Length: 162
Image 1 (tube, rainbow, N blue to C red):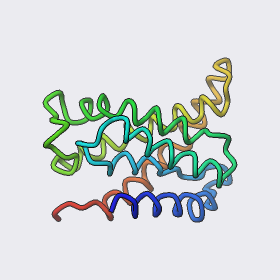
Image 2 (cartoon, rainbow, N blue to C red):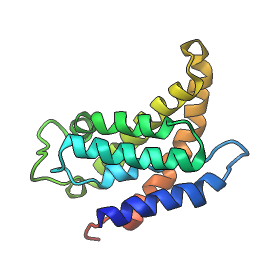
Image 3 (cartoon, helix red, strand yellow):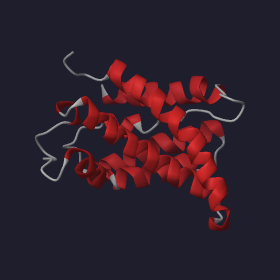
């Protein structure tokens, strides 16, 4: 199932979402759903390797010079902290699942993942902290659409009881 989601996210991002341009500038990036759906009991190293692989394959297909690979790998590294931030300090990384939280907690966790990915992605893309306003502008335009598309996909395709 994880491999199927990996391939589906890759194909969706490369062939569908990268072709969509909202307001002639914004293309939603939903690769963080890989981290959202990754089981909590998975070792951090394997999560980071999977995120790096997905990001690198996407970067090769979209010719984005490893921006996604770096951003997803860093988001995977910070995943335990983002889980604690979203679900509280009592989250158990070996027995609990993000799908057992409330819808608000799940969306908050997804928001932190999307924000982390976009922040790293656009800092690397601009690569000049003197252009902080440009980075913030790109995040402000891309974050709402990326989060909205990711949230809709996560709600529609998450394995939870309805």
